[in-house]
Every structure is written in structure tokens, then in C-alpha cells.
Length: 282
Image (cartoon, rainbow, N blue to C red; front, side):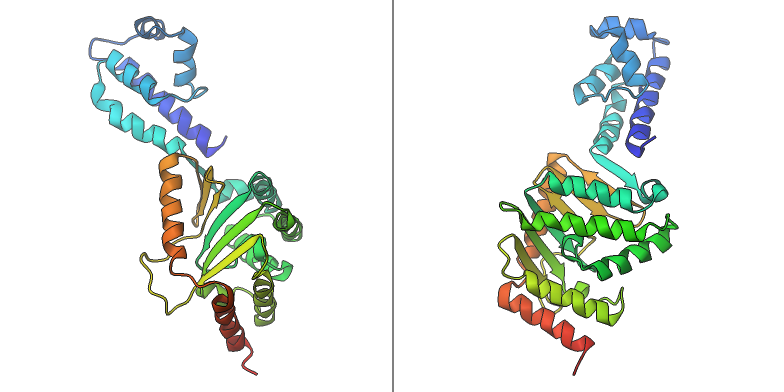
């Protein structure tokens, strides 16, 4: 069972509880349906998590059960459906390659992808060796099945997206991502060379926020905005997939604000070169 479905069933149980505890006495599902002009099956589906309630449904339910004070709580629960929490424990139970396959599918559906990265290079611009180092670290952290090589292959195939006309990858990175030794120095050198090679590609816009830059908001966790239809934000325990308009607008504002502190083109090249020289001063 997914986390999303668990949340929906929990809301259904709460609705059933309101029906049972109505101030005037317990209301049957049939009575509630008749009072609201609904099919009895709708009441059953809502209570068993087989149908997602609307805000209008929730308002009607609390009014019919004589408990209007529960409305705000229920709306808060409903808002949680707009945040699809994909726990790493559940996702990685079958290994890393299914997660990468899911990302490949989401990427293929998109034409414009905006990314913020505060500590690592985004997957669409990674070398195979860098991807292997990052995925291995996460596999050890979560104790996931060791299918790292297949996961790397899927991630590399996903990069074909960059070479399709009409696609646009807009990446903003903190300088820390250029310097973090999550891999051997030689691997990071090759990764920095890969980033240099993307500058000037018509499908890639790479911005880097130097350590010395003035920023309007503190850099936070990585996130990705796909076509203004969904946001994926990472945390240690889970990926958050946000598809409601308010959250998409918020993350878009955050991305735009961070991008205003970034440097591009030759200036970005200079920041990358400085990070490379620090790894190999000769």
C-alpha cells in the first residue's frame, strides 16, 4: 500500500468516525446519503479510501453530521493528498533502478525542467562514475538492494532527453556542489569537465551561485520542477511530489529567486575552473 493510499484511508476512517459520533446520535450510511442526495456507494467509497473527497464533500459531511468545527482539520488532511510522500524505505525496497525508471518516465513526459541543487550535480548532467558514487552512498545509507550498476545505466539513458529538440534543462547550483567530495577527486574532475561541456548547449542553461554571491534566501534542499505540473523535493526520509498550484507557484518563486544570484556562461565557467584547480593545483 502506498503512503498516499494510507493517508486517504485514514481520512475515510475519520469521516466514518464523525458519522458514528454525530451529536444527535449515530447516522447510518444510508441516512447520510439520503440527507446529502448522494448515492450510498459514494459514502462507502469515501469511508474506505476508494474515492478522494473534495472540499465541498467535506463541508457537506461535517454539516450533515453536526460537527462543522471538524472542517478545517479535514481540509488539512485533504491538502496532504497534494503532497505525495514517497518514502525511500518503500521505494528502495526493490532497489534503486525502479526509482530511476520512474524518474526516466517523468523526465520523458516533460519539455522544460528546472532544477535547484545545493550539494551535488543533478542527475541529468552526471557522469557515470559520479552517478555510481552518489547512488552507492545512498544505497549504503538506506540499506537498499545493491543494483547500483543497473541504476547507473538507467540514469545515463535518461540523459538522451537532453539531445531532443524542444527540451530545456535549466539548472541552478550552489558552488558547494562543485566541490563536495562525495566521490574520488579524479571522478569529480571528470564531472566538472562534463559541466563545462554543457555550457553553450541549446538545451541546457547552467547557473552557479558562487560562495561570494549575495542571496535573497538561504539555499535549501534540492528540488525539481517539471513543466509547472509537478515538483519533486528530496528529504532524507522521502521524496515529496507536489502537484497543487500553490506549492508549484511557491517552488517556482524560490527557483527564480535563487537563479537571480547565479552566474552564467563565461562567469559560470570561471567558477567551475576555480573548483577544478582546487582539486588539481598543478
